[in-house]
Length: 138
Image 1 (cartoon, one colour):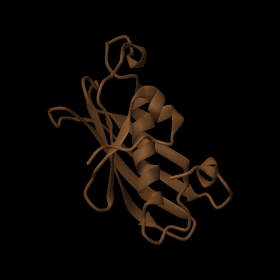
Image 2 (tube, helix red, strand yellow):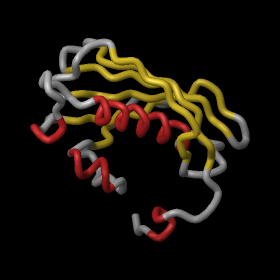
Image 3 (cartoon, rainbow, N blue to C red):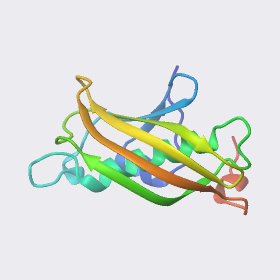
Image 4 (cartoon, rainbow, N blue to C red):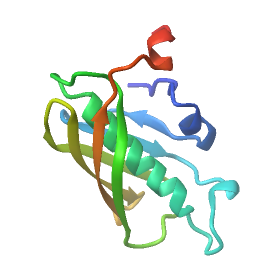
């Protein structure tokens, strides 16, 4: 299955793509960590890692079958960095608990060898107002 062009302009900018995942999970892959995305180690900048973790959690919340909206915005997020992220990276997100308006999620990031790079948890609010996705054509 070929990854679709992402509607999130920032993910396109950094080169990340959503890829197939098991039911109930969301996977976003960063196939190449360009020089502009590195910190001084060099490894993927923490902001890049947090962006990917945030994205997979938000998307997992929005993809629940009974989600009140296809958009879930971050209320709070906590992340933990376990080791430097080098090479291709894969973020995986899933829902821990959902209510009518809020959704708790978790995520992890691994490198190409499957070594844990970072983990995160977050709370997301279902956004009921119009978004730019409402105007986009499929």
